Image 1 (cartoon, rainbow, N blue to C red):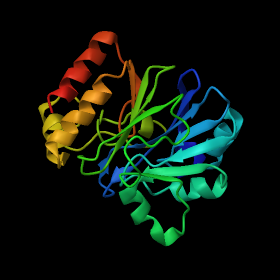
Image 2: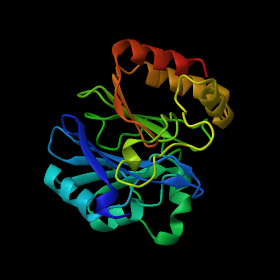
Image 3: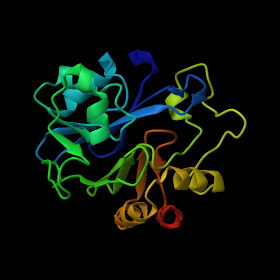
Image 4: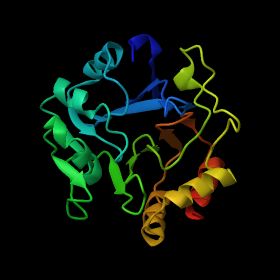
Length: 242
């Protein structure tokens, strides 16, 4: 993916997103997005989900030294290798299933959600909280940056259409037929419920995330923007009903 297709934006102080086109099965436009957060000590934490093109690398290097590279779930693994190659001293952390998927690339992982003991600390917790959804099919991890009240996630919540991610392309980014998929919709709730392979574990982890004081959600797929307090409450209630 070339730099010309990537939309780079500071969505909150020290929180940057890198958005670009991506179609699931080369058919359904869901968009892709990486998120980088500059920590209080100057180090940079990156959820790596899009190509490390020149524009992305330039902005990351401008932010500070990349110390952590995280894979958000078992599916968002395509680009973690190129991030690790560019930043070999950074700690690479991902769910156990992602680690297994990348074993042929001889990547050195410094942590694995699902394999490490519950409560393992990886070093960024003073700035960014995390919650591993063991009961979710894609084994997602949700992240919370209290300083900006931002929730960062991959496949737990979608907010389509992905207008920003396709804004530099010739496509509208609209999903064929139904066009919209957001957390308030019955279709989204059903989709999330279906992907919950362990309902009790899902309820437990959803309660943890719903208890975070977030006012903004950055999804990997779809529109990323601040939400009003009333909307934040609505999203939390929507999630809690899963």
